[in-house]
Image (tube, rainbow over all chains, first blue to last red; front, top):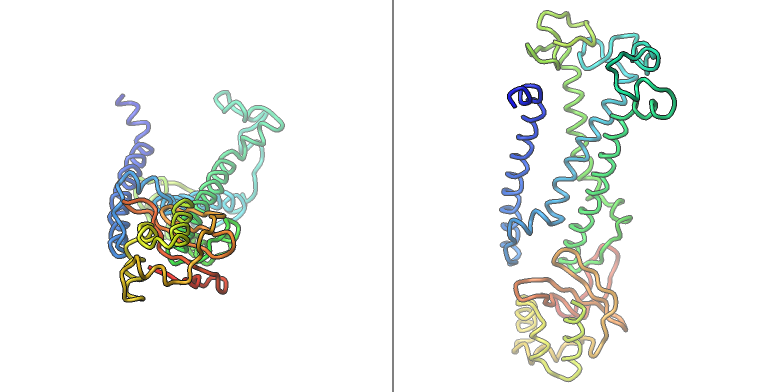
Amino acid sequence: MRRFLKHNGLSLAFLGLFVAAIVFQAIAGVAAFNDEQDQHGDPHVSFWRYVTSSAFGVAVMENWQSEYLQFTLFMLLTVWLLQRGSPESKELGREGRESDEDQLVGEHARHDSPGWAKVHGFRRRIYENSLLIVMGVIWLGTWFAQSVTGVTEYNSELLDHHEATLSWFEYLGTASFWERTLQNWQSEFLAVGSMAILAVYLRQRGSPESKPVGAAHHETGVEG
Amino acid sequence: MAAVAERFSAALERDDGAAACEELGAAAISAVEQQEEASCAEAILRLDLPRGAAAGKARVYVRSASVELVGGGATFLNEGPAGWKLSAAGCTPRAPSQPYDCELEG
């Protein structure tokens, strides 16, 4: 058990933080929702009613989709784009998908390489891009979920104001949908961009996200 | 909520103002009483609202709904502790993205 915790500490810590954060988001969310209900003279909703509502759903999904977009784009762009001096970047001159030898695939695979890294053909192509594929699918799935919960919430407000409702497709063209989407995207892109450039000049001793403290600013693709 | 809209319209057709007011939300009752300066049961019968109309397409999103009436017009409803109640009736569409023009609006 102790070994399990030691070997998986990073993911377990973030899992714990995620669970705590989403629980407290739900608590704060139902309180804020019921404040609005009071303003409209409408009855309060229970915690369980709120967390199964489109209001909570869209609030969660709009954040999840932008996080997975961030990772999807980051993985994709770091294949070909470089940032001199950043530990987030590959070394200069190594842009592209790299050789089979560098990537330890096919005849260059080691005895402990994953099974699909050793084979040829479709299975290896899938495995070579599996991280991008999964992140991309989750991004599209959560973005779709944002749109579905978002149109429900949007139409509920339209009906409250005695206006005609929109179809899902019409909702995709609204300022509301794109404002929700882009407000999340801008923060993700800023965060990743900041990390890429700040890590050129700043250090965090002991973190693999940083270069070694004594590494030169121009050193690219090295970890602390 | 389609049944609520139909009961409301049926009550108006038989001039049963009290029964029609049973289907209204508190804000709509207050609005019609202020507008007509009379009790709801009396005031509601003075308004130009569809009578005896059948419910057509209904749209429900969370706790808000709209019901189109066969023959034209629409009603809007909200779900509260007492179930679905009308918040607006005798509504006709205006320009897109504009609220409906309603004879009764709470």
